Image 1 (cartoon, helix red, strand yellow):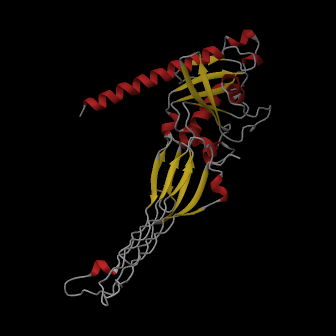
Image 2 (image 1 turned 60 degrees about the vertical axis):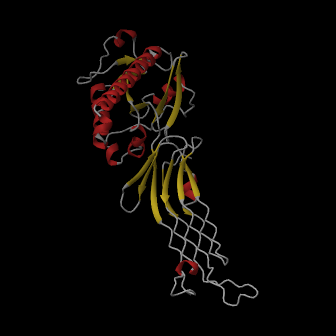
Image 3 (image 1 turned 180 degrees about the horizontal axis):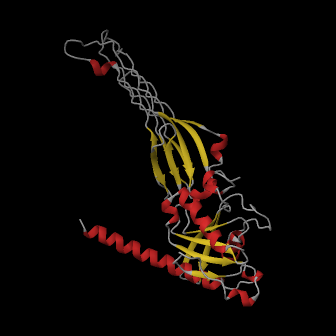
Length: 342
């Protein structure tokens, strides 16, 4: 089961209490104060685990608590520090405070960590309160509570290229033909009920990650169909590929509907660099294929292909490779310009 949202409660460990204690030794009837401090409570951390692909574990377990610090002891012994708690999450997880909606972190890199709740401080023992005028204090401090909060985890898959199209546009078939992914494929809408990622290797010098999300329908930005639930999974992509069936009666309207739904969800998403592709050209007579053209207003690369026959697939992959390399070069130039400004 693919789960890409989870709400969990986290509680860092409380600090241990300081204690009141006096040194008791033979022939020393009035030893001085030796009450130790309490130990600090354990912290709660989030850590990216590249082996995880879903937040499914947190549908069944939603409360997490780190260990509290031990109380102080006599002979000036400080209590043991509470153990930290590490919660493992998949790459691409956005972390928000559930109450305020404030983004606490965006964890994308393997091994990346985020301190989400800090443990309480241990209280001071009575040895800390000794003064020249009060050599036998009977005062100690309790430990402070550890931080607690409810957080929202939102998984956004990390892919280079995202496929955008209506249900049954051929996205899953394309993914299965060019990558190592094995999505469910059938001739009816909404076969894809979860995002799928595929690793695409072009010859020996280039590879990228391709994402297939459940098909959009008109009104997806308002929550219709499955689109809104998964649109965030293509927010991280560098390039979009719009897929429209070659035998569509109104291909330009289909494209405008797709782009409009993206725009209603996020202007940034709608303005991403894109490739336009007609899929399923095997359904058209050969004389009609030459009449296919990109929709008005689209100025990006254009290609026609068939995942069934393989026609046009090499061209599509070459275009994607070219676009990704161009975007990489532009990013590198922009970064160099930014650094030169300092």
